[in-house]
Amino acid sequence: MTTHTESLLLDLEAQRCDAMKRGDFARLREILHPGLTHVHAKGQTDDYDSYFRSGGTHVDYQVIDRSELHVQVLGTCAVMTGRQLLVAVRKNGTGTVRIDSRVLQVWTQEDGGPWRQIAFQTTPLEMSIT
Image (cartoon, rainbow, N blue to C red; front, side):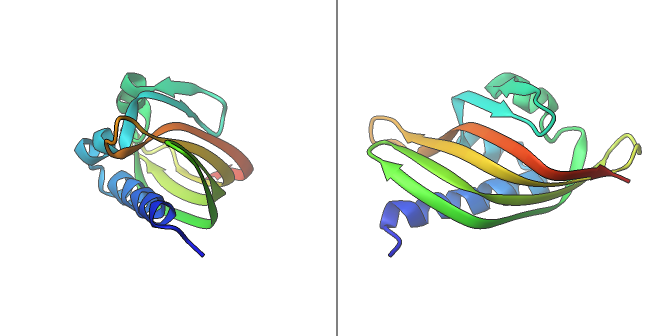
């Protein structure tokens, strides 16, 4: 049985994916925590500021499909795991990136405020550029 908080976090993840596909960086800034650590498929790491200079600004996301999502709420933190299929077209014309991966995310809620994603780690199972 899914709790209210688990449902809320699953909805926030759907909103994050939608904001990425729409290039809605204002909404992403609301969903992502200022203390963000984001580890990409090739191992490069971004913090909150560098994520908005690089993450998603150089590609148009065509597909971001999440599956097998599991949420474990631990007080004011939650761990979300699952699969992610991402397809993105590079804006500089150098190809389409397809990444099938497992993802680990950490969400936090501070002082009764909104839940925000503070950590993201993707581990590719299959990756290609065409």
